[in-house]
Image (cartoon, rainbow, N blue to C red):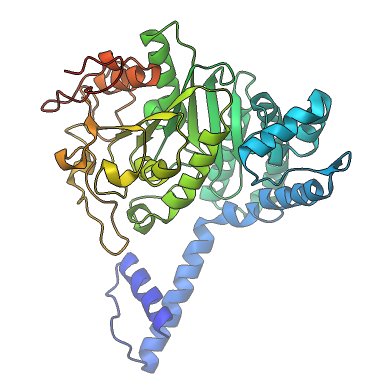
Length: 424
């Protein structure tokens, strides 16, 4: 009864009705509760038409079928590595079986190999192209069969998903991770990841999903646009440095400014995935993380476990990093922070209480980050806009040109103590 009352009260407020705060069990109140609960169910059914249809025999079932086959498969007498095995173990396994067997595994188990940290990068690209093709075919068939049952919104969502899959399959795209289940996860590489001297990873925030991975309007507020902009700026800043940039939307981000965005649950699971990515990157390149909005919470939680190759961790428009200061992050990486003066995130209380909130403001003097200028960035989504000082600073960090970074007003010592920096 308590759960029903809370459930009903919340949805009464959403529907614009007075909330019920007592536990009165009168017949009239019970009827209202039942009617409101039914109304909520009908609203949910009406607005999630494609979601309900899509999960019937959807991507998760295809993955489960592959996992069953993967567990039974043998190379000679050896079992295949567990999908959650350490990247080094996975890399050693693939290095030992030869190109032909690698390709065979990618073609037979694309949903696994395409997301397998430690598998060769080129093999993951191949596997994800195959997985995208299969998913696109399945979704087209399902849409054709379910078209008459979908709401207008459901059909719109279904068509958007199809368009996203088609776009991701373009020949010039390098998809490092792809999972269409739920809201979807994806990561894309710009540049030659296997030969890069320096790798940058863009970690986006709230409302990141398969559908918002790339945008036409407000291009540079989406992961693909952010990464493309950063990659171009890095190449312009240091043409002789081999760079690669990853648009990393391979975690479940909060939807909207709600409870999930105010707590650390999704950041904790995202941090595990981010750490695994950085451990699996090929070669010995230095790595910089560029973490926007809630993405900075993910980076803050991940900081303590990041490998030493992660040399720089930069946050922009951060609600906090779930630490009270840089020392609390427990990282060897240099920590940088910036915030545009017009960014609304500055008005959000930076606190941590009973699991709510993400701690101190990273641009606050007491936090101890190296505070960078965000000149030219307009608002919360403007940090990766071409031509801005914020993007120029990110590019300088990405290529290791610490002499070129511009400190924020009042923070002129932000380069101090860095090899190659001017140490003003």
